[in-house]
Image (cartoon, rainbow, N blue to C red):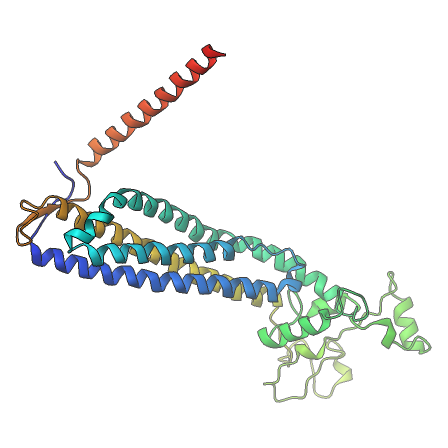
Length: 341
């Protein structure tokens, strides 16, 4: 007995074909959107590549671009089949392709599910890459004369301004590195010399942050130097004062940006899987309804559509038998080949 049979007349077949045509073209639009998001994600990763120490993975955006292209192509083909389904002559040329097409759709749904899972699971890898990359970016901030790091200062400053963040974890990360190049330090000055000599590694450390950490929304002029020295500023206590620099770390800000993007794309792909599954079910009903027409020459006659020719258990049993027969056939061929040698 067929699984989930439904009776169809001409009016129902026409409505099903028209509805499927619209859903398929909606899937095409979603595919274009996924393709565009994949390119945007890839561009954003390239743009923040220095913040990730050039170790970012492009697996997810590349898969998104592939999935977007496949979604557009697969759905456009399905839409064409639905458009021609009510014309017996035109539908006849598509009929032999329907079974391979539905199998292709099943494989495509598996690929989309894998891509959606990667969108959620790869966020941890992005977090670790950002943590290491930002740590090195802060360390190389001062190296404006070193080949390969000339634009690190500009990139990090623009990142802190754009994402309203400061440092890796927080603004105190700047206290642990020398972010002013020796080129701009007056080594003849006793204060500078003492500060350098007092450090074990010979670094010029200070409780200051770059200008890009300043919050322009603060009513007080930016205090970016001597942040922990209350006597250096009038009416100031860094322990209770609301600092007029960004207190959020750039790792948190950038991770929030990328994770929200990846979560949104993952949800969109899950929606696309549901849409494609609906398309597959509808196309199967339409194809079987056209095949089981009592009088193919009379379009007004009734027919029956179904998802599976047999029940679920019988279908799986037949599938297992075919797989065993295929496996047995391969073993026989292997044995004959061994005997021949």
